[in-house]
View (cartoon, rainbow, N blue to C red):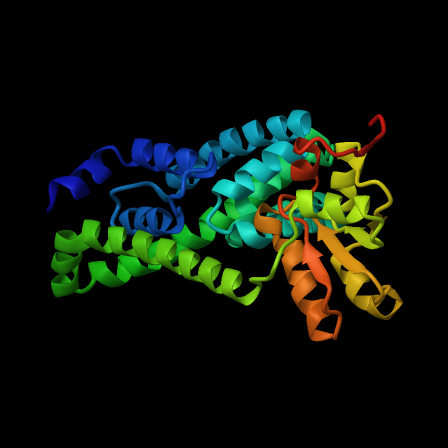
Length: 312
């Protein structure tokens, strides 16, 4: 048995707790491979299945509660920060906000199964002012379902391996390599999805300086705020004269959008993901002068240009 495997067996709960905690705090470490490994060790009696599940639940609740509190006090800023460091940044902000707005605490039951959403669900729940007792109850239930599913898969694999002597010795010898390979495969898969998304929705953007120049010249511009209503309400800022529509509303009302002027879209997603998706879709429908605002409202305000502000 390799020293690394022996270390995992001897200090299994501590390793499991530390890895999952760091992962749920935002480090790009996929948890499923370790949960499957814990299940396999539980099948051979080297870890207790209930203790392993309890360890994961405690680690997740500590991390998620911290992000809930930060999201409640810092709102959309922390959500955008987490989305930038996530391996699934292009759609996670909007999906997390939509999920919490549509399903409330129920969204927490399945969010960890979806890449990117597991990290964003807790701070988004805090931003939405979901009561903490409800958050804690549904988040704990979701963690039990999520972690339990992977641990059960590992338990099944562990029992299969245990009854095959040749496979057992191979697994003992190459367990660490297999675990590392699974982690690398998940990370590479996420990077590939990100690259495909960027290529699909690559589109010309307009800078705040260029937009301000056109407005100063008296050019008519149709500006659409694509941010989620929850984010708009918490932010307390808007672009002067902008129209607030969801991405779905923009597509549904595309025939009502003026065609005699430039259309500028902005959102709060990293790299203007939602605005880029809508811009590409509108161009497919024949609206050619559609541009995401580079950097969104934050970049516009940082450049010293005016915004409408109200108290929240």
